[in-house]
Structure formats: structure tokens, C-alpha cells
Image (cartoon, rainbow, N blue to C red):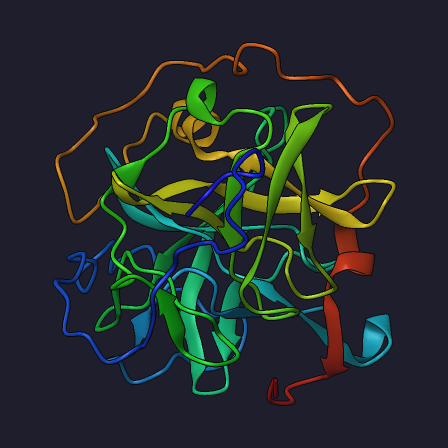
Amino acid sequence: MTDATSTSSSTGMSRAAKTIAVGVIAVAALLASALAGPAGPAAAAGGYDYSPGEPMIMDNGGTINGGYDQVCSGGYAISGDSGFFLLGQFCATVVSGTVRNNQGAYAKNLYSPASQRDQSLLYAMVPGDDAHQMVADPLTGEQPGDGRIVGFMPTVQQRPGMLVGKMGVGTGWTEGAITGVVGDLLCTTMEVAPGDLGGPVWRLDENGLRALGTIRGRDSSGHGCYRPIQETLYEYGANLPVFGPDQGRPTWGTWAPGMPYLGGTTSAGRAFTITIPTRADWTP
């Protein structure tokens, strides 16, 4: 992937269909006792393979809140002392006990932050399901490289003008350049739309395919802004399971030298999700 400062007009990415056999993060037996509660639609029978960027459908309270559900994008899987979790976002007025896709529920909300700076939700997978730490366009199945995440890029290395990519159920695979900081988010020129909230941000270069963060909103120009993954991992005392050397549990990061502060605010929340009828399937 070339940067915005390069004279090349190509990102240099190779797109391949999502057909590669990969190793899985062992979440099949994750916290079985914690997942025993009722809440939400019936769980899938197991055997579902999750990848970051796939749909997270949240119950918005049924007919009480207008008879609709809301769809956003799932984030990376992280690992801590209590097991493996999927990163989600506040996609609905009611924080659902479970998230589902068209096949049924695949994860249950175990933690909703209150005072932490990082507002990601943590979801534990339904027993029998697994997670691949790989990215693919949820609209086409295409991947950057072989799709395997080999590590994460520290926040200080995510510099102005760097080209990055994201996956989301709203606009699929889009790319853009980092422009600067708004609040605690890095903003870019990436196209985003409702449904992309929570989707994985990444970069493919000579160091392989690395995680950068998760989509958290839009700037005043309507472009995508994301929370760097290093700060998310620090907040939760977690590491990122990858197809490469373990980078451990990071400290709090710092912005890259020369990173401009853009001012203004970002927008997210329900306006950044897709609304569908209650219990309906999501269709691209």
C-alpha cells in the first residue's frame, strides 16, 4: 500500500477471494457458563466462523422502540485474562444481550464500559463458534493480501498521509489517507456510511497486514474516523491474537510526530448504523 505522499496512483494491494484456509483463535469453549443466560434470539448451533468486519445485528428493543433492529460492523477479536472477546460498538438504543447475523446469534455481551475512554463493547462467542483474525470485504469477500492479520501498528507509527483501509457492512472495502486527530480519534479520507461503525481498520505494506483500529465515527466532511487499536488493547489489558509474533499487552500510545489536530467533533451512534425490521435478515 502506498502513502498519499507517493506519486503512485495504485495502492499495490492484491485482492483474493475469501477461500484461504487459516488457523483459528480457540474460542469454541469460551466462558460457557457465562453464556448460559437467556437474552436475545436463540443461539446458533455452533460452527460459525467470525471475521472482523462482518455484520453485528443488535435488537433495538423490539416493538417498544419502533419495531426495528440495527446493523453495524464487528471489530477485531482480543484476548485477556478472562478469555477471548469480539469488539463491538453501541449500535442500538438498547445494548442487546446478544448479537446475531442471518444464521442466528453468535456472541453475547459480557461488558459495556461506563467510565473508560474506550467505549467498545466486549462480546463472548457462543460455544461451538470460532473467530478468524482476518479481514475480508463483507460485501464481496475480497481480501487485502491473504487476509491474515500478522500484528498491530502502534499509534505513533500511524502518521499523517498514510494510506489505510477499512471493512464495513455499509461501504465494504474503502481506503483513504490519515488527515489528523479529532478528539481521541484519527480521521481519514476514507468513505464511510451507516453500517460501517465498528469495522476494522488496517494497512497492508512490506510488514504484512496489520490492525490499526476500529471505525468510531465520521468527521464534519463525512469521512471515517477510527480509534487506534493500541489504546483499546491498553484500556482492556488485552493483547491481539494474530498470525504472527505476539506483541503482548501494549502501553498507552502517543500520536505520530507532526500529527495535526483538526478540531471539531465526530458523529456516530444510531445515525451511523443500518436499520432493518425486527428479526429481519441483513442483505448487502
